[in-house]
Length: 248
Length: 235
Image 1 (cartoon, rainbow over the protein chains, first blue to last red):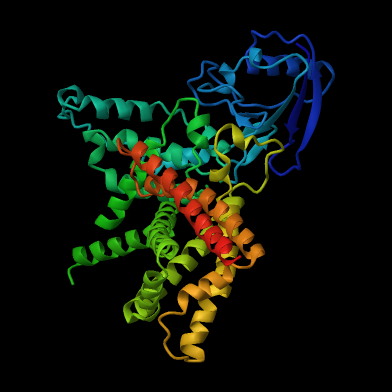
Image 2: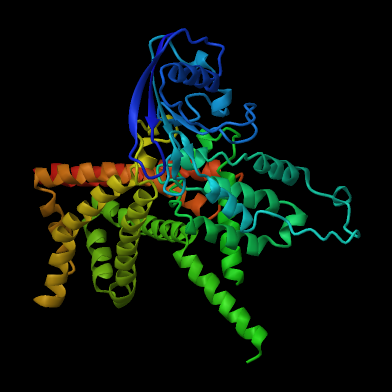
């Protein structure tokens, strides 16, 4: 396949970025999107052009590192996949593909397509954990009976890889799907219920301080999430938050 | 006061404040004010619809609504506050949301993952707000002028004629029809969405959504029918 790529180039966080156009030839439909980017970078380096910076790590769809906004959608046109699992067979010969970084005030661009998503880390640090008593007398988790439905829902929420596609897709750059997944995975389990009130208050407070937008229930986050995290989690977080606020 | 109690009260106050100032708190406030307006809309529609069947009953109810002190001096101010709160909060949230992504995408395919109505609530809401301006000009201001400025004598039989007189003008009817179309779009997303905002997403959600969608189609269509009915009758 021969393609035309329009890629966001930005030298650093302070620099003004622009879209650059690069033609690329002989792209195999079996390549992953990131492999295609690797080929483009080799081509650019051969021409003496600075290669395009982009995030990636496991390339197995589980680390949440890759973060490209492709043809107007986070992780591209495919569903339930990260950019590294998007394959070039989803495109046609002669296509023009626009590639941009995830955009949000809370996700500033570091260089080209790499963005700083440490806002998610700070939200997680604000309460996305269970304080564990490591005295040696801790009850074995397997000995605590948990309703199968709750366990399944907690597991579903825990599959969130924190890639930020929800923020990137939301017209308001809201982080509620991410935060609600982290709140839900603990709120549904007895181990997490002990700190549930403080957790939701602290995580939402941190989320707001990071400058994410308000949720308007468009559902774009759920559609674009590579792990299929459901809007049900946002409703649960809202309930948890209301309960925590009124409980005082 | 024991320190522990004081700390608890302070903690409670902080939590209550965050309920108003947080993203979730504001979202819940939008949802609750929206649901309140949906209830009002139902009541307004019911009274208007009666005008199609019985001039006398319509006059009777309108006279009651226009002169009952509880309706006039308690419910009406609450309603006006609800409307002002809902649209002011809507504009405030829109400004905040736009700030959350100061640098826009070159290509953003919103239609790939979210319906048009959900992404354009600010515009459908703005049209409904403009319509409210026209509606107040048509009915509310003359009513306030009649009762409280000129203090004209009570006339329990004037309401039906005043209303049908307004619908004689074809351009006004067209504006009403367009506005109700946008009201339908606004309700189409807003009504069902408000349940999600207050934390309701369970086995009843599919039924709630069906009801909300039916409501968002039937009520505006009903209002359009009433406007057209009185226009045609006045010809």
